[in-house]
Image 1 (cartoon, helix red, strand yellow):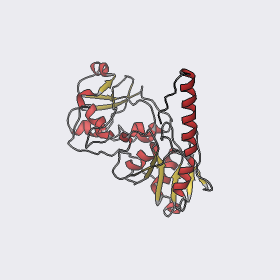
Image 2 (spheres, rainbow, N blue to C red; image 1 turned 120 degrees about the horizontal axis):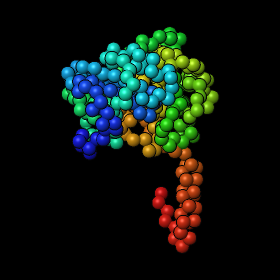
Image 3 (cartoon, rainbow, N blue to C red; image 1 turned 45 degrees about the vertical axis):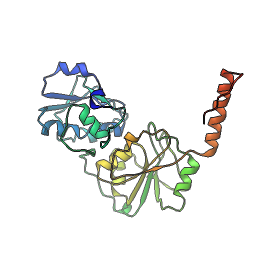
Image 4 (tube, one colour; image 1 turned 120 degrees about the vertical axis):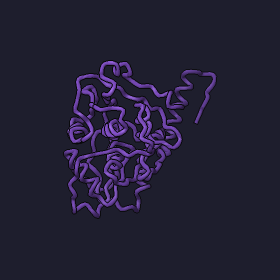
Length: 269
């Protein structure tokens, strides 16, 4: 893959605004999805390519809590605009780059640096009672990979984990670990920031930790693309699926193949 191969969604929208104006349009809407663009406004202005940078009101947000903390406080944006923007599609990274670099290059920007980290301008509150605590966030929104719950608990066996975040819709919980509440995004930020050590899945929490210069132990399973291992400060740890799950998957595939072709069964493991 080459930089010229990158596809810009909404490229035609560039013709609607002056050439010195950039409109960022964030798709998917997760916390990490927005943070992947947090370095762009500063680079756009400091390289001199753009004088004005706006966040499109067509941007997606999976939570209304994201916008006030991520963009309202951002010193390099000029506000919001009721126009669609453009969005680089990043299928993979090039050697020597991370996902944030590819977003930058996709916009036709280059500050000469590589392995960019995200930015987050909210000032978290230090919780002194958590400074010696190890926190695990079991939650994820889209894809943490195929992680076996037995393998996950096996990994944590004998490791110190004081609290796990209260479960939301998608989660991989640990056994016998008490919960800690994070009713607001500000509270969630402060918990990560204050902890002695932070474990999480391949999720927005990992990207948020990077934005706060907080090293994290990021767990991932099968089918998680390496482009999401975007921070050099993090420790990325593979957790394999449970054996029973693999056997069930093989049986289901075998049954489907048998139904499709009763004379031959091709089993690919």
